[in-house]
Amino acid sequence: MADGDPTANSAEAQASVTAALDSVTVINNIVANNEAVAGQTTAEKADDADRNYRHIEIMKEKDWFWNTASADQKTTFTNAISAGKAYYDANKS
Image (cartoon, rainbow, N blue to C red; front, side, top):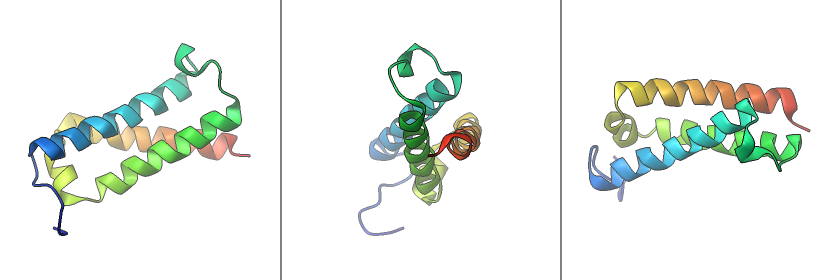
């Protein structure tokens, strides 16, 4: 564990998991092309998908983060990375 990293399952770690779930929501909205992203161009959505799936990838590599996430959340994160990357790769400018 790097200096300053939270402990797994601490309030700070839980907050990080919650924040990463916000990235999942962004990716899901982009892939579904729903009302939440109606005003964005395809290029803007691709950039958002890229930024959010990469954020989850970075967090997934942190032991304290991954050990805090539930099994269902781990599946959700893994699926969101795949979906966000696929959207970005198909729509990047």
